[in-house]
Length: 327
Image (cartoon, rainbow, N blue to C red; front, side, top):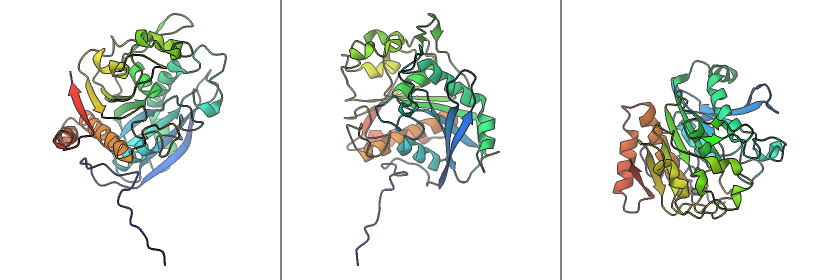
């Protein structure tokens, strides 16, 4: 008879030693479709929520632009989404127009291939339609706290969070400024987001020209900026700290969570065993998602001590996964 080896670390709920409540079962419902005039396809949203509970806060999560077929869409980022939902959040994941499987990256559209303007519009439309989304998901109606909403994104998704937080770009089609503070988001987290446009001096400057206009002067709200110390790629910039610009170049107050030895995937936050993860490390993923969860709890519920407790554990660790700095 084959011996059964007990599983000691549930990959969807493991918190790497950081203090979080016991997880609850989750359910995922998709697609919830939002018809948007002029958009080539409806805005498709995946909703992942705790199976129980009321007055649930919301995370709107923006995916990256990565090379996979389905990871850069609402099909990706399960390691983050499942954890956050198991610990009390309703997570809404839009599939942006740059999702590889949609086939629109080569479209004759001035917003292609990144669709930066459209991405920011997607986040705003989800908040506009939050009531309809809630009613479309069986068993969710009446359980959502629509006054506690966070915006979180990775890579290009981090840039998208910036655009609803006062970061700006220039629209190449008409020269207008894109980006403004949407006050409906009560907490914001930018993970491995692009830095200042003037320092995007690698080969990416040509295909991703709109990124060259990225500026942080107007990004006034509080933001948690998550970066990896080894997230350096000359394809984008020769500056080693380029992805820290949302922290260093924006007005205060800002907080930075720096993850030691992490590369762009921060251990594999976009998907377990994903080919594009160059620093596969489940413990790192567990720490990142637990720390982001703690930050969001304390931002959305100012009396919740989750963030100071988590940062105390981080500071007291004999082998810390990273460090926190504020300005």
